[in-house]
Length: 106
Image (tube, rainbow, N blue to C red; front, side):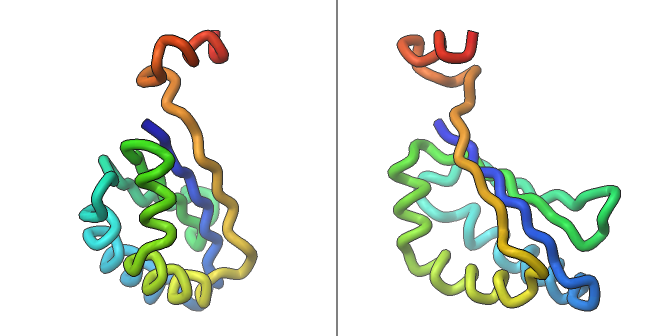
C-alpha cells in the first residue's frame, strides 16, 4: 500500500472555484480502481493551500491512475488554479509494509 500526498497552493482569487473543482473531482478519483481512500484537507494557516492524501493498493495502481483518463481530465484544470508548482510525494505506509521492508523504518 502506498500513500500519495500532494500540496496544492491555489491563487487566492480562485479559492472558491478551486474548492468546487476539488469536491467535483473527489468521487471520480475515489472510484478509480486501486484507490483505497482519498482525503482533501485545507491548510489552517493558508486558506488557499490544500493537500490531497490518497491511499493506493500499490504503486502500479497509482501510476495507472496518473496515466489514465480521470487524471488527464482533472489535472490540467487543477493546474490552472495553482500559484506555484504542486509538490507531491509517494510514501509507503510503514504500518502496512510487508515484513521484509518494515526494517527500513525501525
